[in-house]
Length: 172
Figure 1 (cartoon, one colour):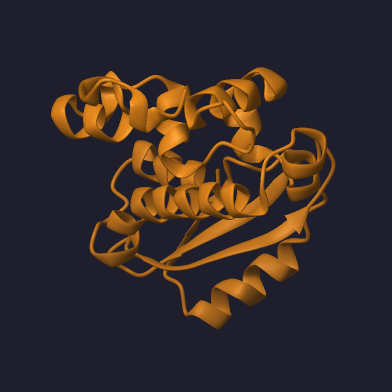
Figure 2 (spheres, one colour):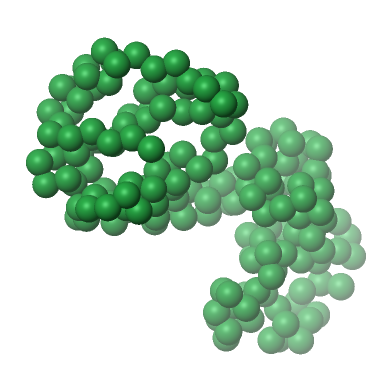
């Protein structure tokens, strides 16, 4: 049955507007971004199928394009919309630290780096370059490794710090 045939307050978009996003299931949230690709199936049904296929919302959003629409039967448009939504959320999480906040405590660094690096499936050595007031002036992913190790060259870190004219450097 199409979502347009559902009672008004059970439709994902209307439910979100009336009750807020926390009231929606993962499948209902996904359904707002994707459409059904099968006759007689709603967008919520397609979202449930994708969540079942990948096992979790995180694994679905971390999927590469081929896995998403070849293996799982999703569409190119749905993949693009979900990737755009994910990027918007990452930028939202990092924007307070980029635009005006001071990194005053480890939690600030953790939140910023989680937004920037949380999707990687391998080790990444990255640095936040800070001015003398501990505001972010640069972020560089410097070294990439395997699932549990990355080779780091201190000389390259110093070169990047000088490039940014950083007063401080922090890493996870």
